[in-house]
Image 1 (cartoon, rainbow, N blue to C red):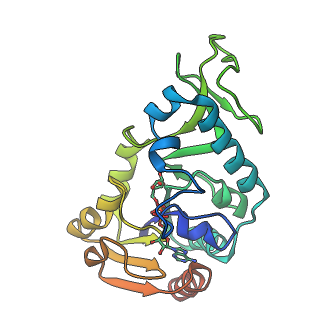
Image 2: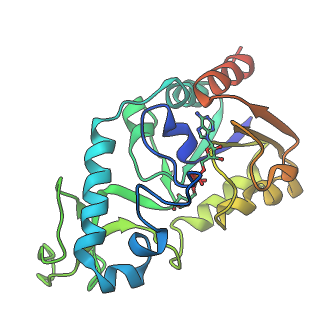
Length: 226
Ligand code: APR
């Protein structure tokens, strides 16, 4: 059976990492447009690097939880494509391989001048020279609002091949990921949503499983891996 899973911030919430859409509309005390757009980076690169440096430190200190670990088990029994919007590396640290990071990763640096990528140091700054072209144009390898998500061709193929599509801990507000359930459903997949509550696109799912991912995801994985 081919299963395509999309994860969002909710799967890492129980590892202590903040989700984005808190009730006050702020993201760790910042407005999204001040820290997660190319315009914000052009305006104030130090603020943006400071924000991501702090997130990198927090992500490095966090530990995978039972929901991340259950997806490792799922891949042992089924043909799994694991797509994440998360920029932490908790799936990899739980033991998942070949994770598709559609919004990039805190662990990587990107040269805005020549597009070279390399492993990010713990703290980055905009004046760090690119190891290839030497220009001081270092940015986090993160897909910001207004930029194109990575690996989309592979993701659409995995949605089309899926017998089951499961979205875990994502609010369904950010496209293209918010459209994956509709697409997979049209192509014949059974669509499952794991969330504390209905997401913004809950109607696109055949089944909605409410509760903390650390409990609901292992329970589902146990049931389909028996
Ligand atoms: N278990 C299951 N779901 C949870 C849990 C939990 N323990 N805790 C929170 N959630 C759910 C919330 O109900 C919410 O629907 O996770 C979702 C998190 O939503 P967002 O914070 O909007 O995160 P996400 O959907 O991943 O955001 C998408 O937006 O900010 C950008 O690029 C960023 O990748 C991110 C994208």
